[in-house]
Amino acid sequence: MKKTILFLAALAVSVAAALAQNAAPAGNAENGKKLWVKNNCYSCHGYEGHGGSVGPKLAPKPISMVAFMAIVRHPPQSTMPTFTARVISDSDLRDMWAYLNAIPAAPAYKDVPLLNAIQ
Ligand code: HEC
Image 1 (cartoon, rainbow, N blue to C red):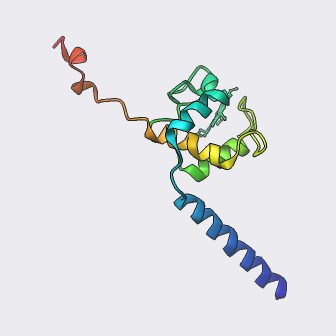
Image 2 (tube, helix red, strand yellow):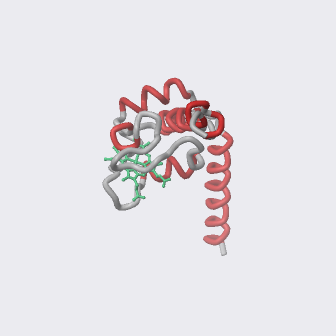
């Protein structure tokens, strides 16, 4: 019984921590842009997270910050390397996520005059 209560308490604490992380300040997108290049993410995912020959597209509209951080720490079995907290801190990851999140969506083709020139 005591163990169950301890387990439930630990679970509550970790859920609260995850929620707090979700509500944490969004991070510094400008710094995130530098870190994105410095940490070599661009080489597979493109300079603006638009996807490359190896890595999938991550922006605009990246997955949630919590999911983003979880995948960078434990990527699925693929060519994506694992980046531990020793290599990239949580705070740096939040900044990189903020950078991806700040990337605007491409305009709809109908709003690009050149794409509507021949009609
Ligand atoms: C050597 C190439 C490579 C590098 C470098 C790399 N990735 Fe990836 N990444 C991948 C591949 C390949 C996948 C797809 C994994 C899969 O689902 O099989 C991926 C998947 C991801 C995903 C999950 C995408 C999704 O929607 O499922 C995130 C987030 C991500 N990478 C972030 C990063 C970040 C941040 C960095 C830099 C710290 C980085 N990656 C560096 C190759 C790379």
